[in-house]
Image 1 (cartoon, rainbow, N blue to C red):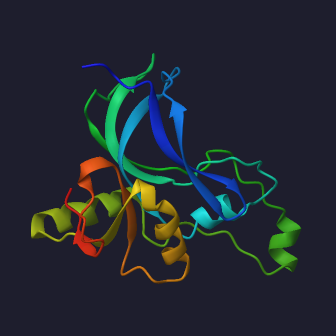
Image 2: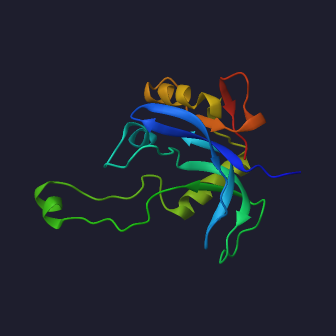
Length: 180
């Protein structure tokens, strides 16, 4: 079977405008893996990417919460294998610069996640798995990314909006149970 040369992505082409495009598949660089995305969460953080922020030019691809399988491994990568299922939450890895004067006189603060540490999250997921607890999500095929985004922004999605690729979409369009 021939591997495809392109993949589909939803791209913000202008403030508030999403478009489904095809892009060339590239090989992962040193210390990188390529993931075949199975699902991608749609959340309010994506509005910064879709509506524009900090002078980052368009076009740009929203979506920073993905689950998929590793389909290619770059040089220098250890501890990961082809076909391994992974979940990724992308956040910048640059240091955060903070002006102490702004903190003190601006009554500002810096805080971490409200959901706990990585260990806390792993224990929560393990408990949920042992107890057969699954999240309730409303799934949308990739082609309906604009609808999923608009409904999420209007708070018209029951529980959680998730884009799914290919045959994984539940045609009911209603809340579905996502299984690990």
